[in-house]
Image (cartoon, rainbow, N blue to C red; front, side):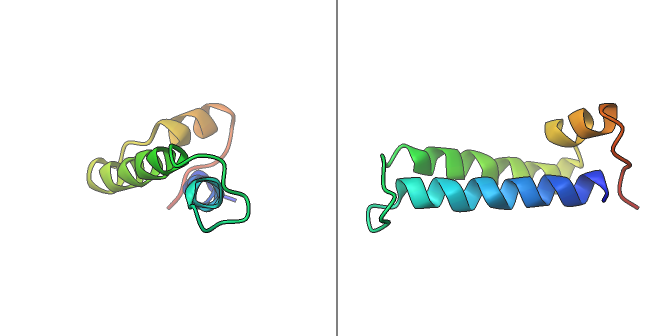
Length: 69
């Protein structure tokens, strides 16, 4: 599995979990501040789409995960 696929899987998981914890209608609601984490992950995905720079991808490559094509 390539680093870009792992980044997207982790980002998608973070977004879904933070929505579960931050949406008032969710049975797992904790605090609406979790929605700020959702926005943070979304903004990171947006900026990485424009700049092709992602901190998590750099960490994964240093751990030996191969990069995407």
